[in-house]
Figure 1: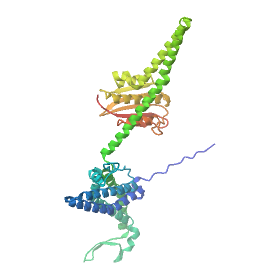
Figure 2: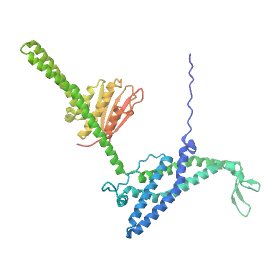
Figure 3: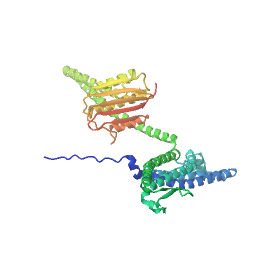
Figure 4: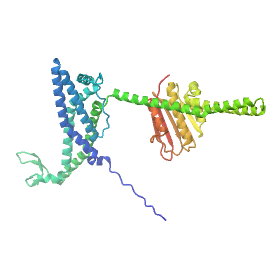
Length: 441
């Protein structure tokens, strides 16, 4: 008989006790230490070059000098982003590059000067070089003072012996006058209190350092990262690509379903009717049987066409809205599914179509893969968002990783600023929530 020994999990050290020795604390402290000398260099360069360029604006030389100041500021930005990635673990994208006007396949130096002066990103880099110095002085002073004094007080019992002895009493003389009255930081009680105070500072200083480092993160992200407009344009370009790919995939699916399904049946139907026509005079009974078979093929072809049209945009969705359409969709599911719809108005037709398609895909997953005994679909409006939730009591384990169907569904929702959240632990249950923008008709 095998004996299984229960293993007691090791208790985790609280974060407050781990913080002084964590690598994150020391990396952020190093970032604050390096920030001051670098900020002095950046500030000196930015102020000197900007003042020189502004003073020379009465001549032509002022314009290229200002452009050189902006170019140098962008170079400093590269260094600061690299420092933030290494020490602050800040994931920040590169800002939009300078794009000079190209003529005859190449750009002139003046085109580069004009592009630099017109670039808002370059001016934000210059602003960072100016604003970062006062903050770096403050952050450097606070972090160094707290870090040094906290460890010095905490370790005071280990080095207090270096002080001379006063009237037979070792320790630091905190107060003394001509009358001979004096106060010394010595003795077991005073040393213990000093050590306790140092311990409190050692435990609290890392959180101050993290707060200071967070401000650095905000400065780097806000002034040295891509602008919101550029980020939004990139997102829209990506969403457009996803929408184009999705539309192309839908067209290929429709073409494949028509070619392999209804079209093949109609071709066979035409051949059967041709044979029945030839046998009509010679063998009317055989011709009648062939016509009867052709009639059955017509019904099947019509059903396939209805299913195909329903998958594109069902008539019930156009006529009656999402609630009845989802109820009809749930009725065709192989698993018993209940539907709850709380919508006082209807969103835009495009949003309705995407919500219907999302529910259809999720219910197909419930039917094919979940091994569920029951499911539920809920749809409601929350502010300016349309919420769709599909849950089942199946085996779970679903996710958007691996490029599966849920991954493609998440990309489709993302193309219209939607979100797909999957909560599906192994063993179930599975809850998939889709959030779409609400756009009134």
